[in-house]
Image 1 (cartoon, rainbow, N blue to C red):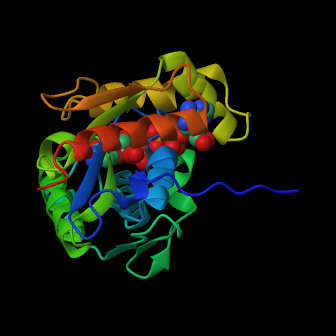
Image 2: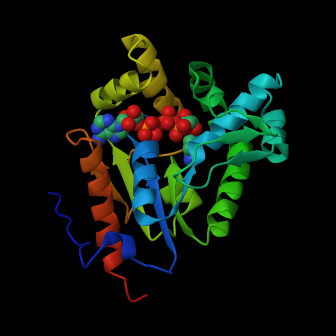
Length: 243
Ligand SMILES: Nc1ncnc2c1ncn2[C@@H]1O[C@H](COP(=O)(O)OP(=O)(O)O)[C@@H](O)[C@H]1O
Ligand SMILES: Nc1ccn([C@H]2C[C@H](O)[C@@H](COP(=O)(O)OP(=O)(O)O)O2)c(=O)n1
């Protein structure tokens, strides 16, 4: 016989019901940002924005349109003129560039390898940050947003800000499994650690700024990590339930 338990009285899903709730999550590659943020957004009934997908979409467009990464002005111009349509809820997963579905192609290793060249273009960053802020506002400021500069640049006023991290070893192991277990250790190191090093030239996603929580998932499984993030949300938000 199945026994069902009632919802807890103090349910995290009901926190700030009808009020703004932006959860900003930053962290290094393979730390679980996308998957954990999506699960958290589902639990909280919030929108979801994967900002990395926007950098990947612009990278795909530059490669496809033969725009040289060395031409900073051309990359910045592409960032301004490009139409990026991406899923804004955790239930769906799609990215379209000028109407072309690039959901799969932007996750391919050639894009992962090239994306830091776009992410370190300050003009392109400014434009993508502007777009991300518009998308957050359009969600009614009820969204989980993940990336590298969300806690510091895109949404420093978010009700909840946290860095999700994990050891280098855990992150490379998880990325390897995610990509089907076929990549060599050297290729994984290039995809995860070398990319983080390049990206950190323009954004600091390893150190938690003032007021930013840290969740280290090295010793946690996926569900435990989601619970740890939900606990941070509960702690941060229950303090100002009356606001
Ligand atoms: N705590 C965890 N334990 C085990 N695997 C995890 C954990 N968190 C995430 N993962 C898995 O690790 C992989 C990388 O996660 P992902 O969300 O893509 O990271 P990021 O967006 O930070 O690069 C995914 O396959 C995800 O399911
Ligand atoms: N807010 C963001 C999000 C991503 N980026 C850059 C840095 C990353 O190398 C790429 C791709 O980000 P993405 O989150 O998809 O990367 P991983 O899932 O960690 O592999 O974009 C960024 O500079 N700022």
